[in-house]
Image 1 (cartoon, rainbow, N blue to C red):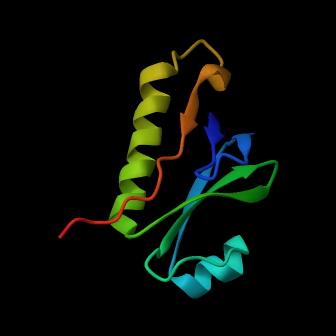
Image 2: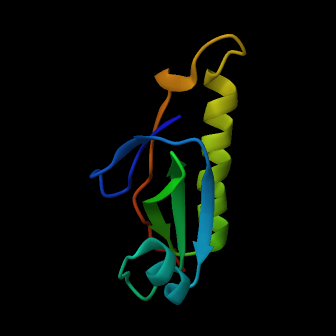
Length: 98
């Protein structure tokens, strides 16, 4: 599935996804310095290399994004066709309204 990163600087064909939670884990695994109120990053995998796709305030929000990616793959991926026609754009970070 094609994914456009949250910062719009990366467009990649990803064949796997993972979450990293916690500022230190994101700094280590994603090699990113992030805002203190963001604590979960989504990474996509291509050719054995993990790429940063977006960062979210909570793990729950990041899981919502992964659920949407999964839904898009299922909805747009007929069993006999290539998934290369699907492009998912990572949503912007949104602060929680309290």
